[in-house]
Image 1 (cartoon, rainbow, N blue to C red):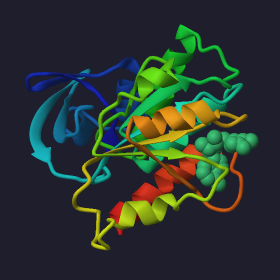
Image 2 (image 1 turned 180 degrees about the horizontal axis):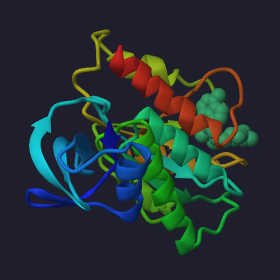
Image 3 (image 1 turned 180 degrees about the vertical axis):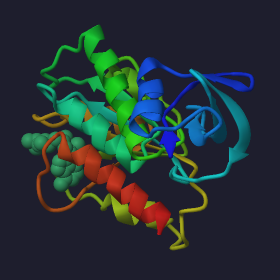
Length: 237
Ligand code: SAM
């Protein structure tokens, strides 16, 4: 039985009203019963219920995270499209989202949206039993996002004869496996209208490699989900 990310104070956990309800009413645990709590910083703990609080007993080792840190630069899709991106990419193991406003972005993000995205990420991380919740940066301009630091940086471009992301993830130029060398990667996906030529050129100047996600044109919402699936496939098998 796990409960989600909790407030830890030394060896004690403060339970929210919802968590108390879940443990005591739904699961019918009683004082002294044990459960697993996640601290939101990558660790799971065996804990003992003590009335409306809980006591931390010992660390439990689990691994549900990808072996690589992935930042997704996503040109904000219109409407509530980014909600879906956050939900599914969190399930797939993303580390950080950088929502960007690019030349052809139609959405004007509000502070309420950021709060909503962070809530969705937390719920999706709990649901997938991840040990960390992905970070969601404040929306930034595409040009500022180009300075994000990583071992490898890719920009997905729907038009043009570019190598497939999966082959770039798997191969080094000398033909050896690339997988153990890369610890951090950044992948950028564009809005409904795509990237402008200048954006692609600026990205290449900043060290991004243009890549394909296959022969079909994917929606702005689908592209980051496919990119993350390819990273998970390349690194988890
Ligand atoms: N009309 C736009 C164009 O020609 O670029 C289509 C944009 S597509 C709906 C939105 C974004 O998803 C693209 O900017 C790109 O980042 C990504 N994308 C979609 N399909 C792709 C593919 N087959 N390969 C690489 N990236 C793709």
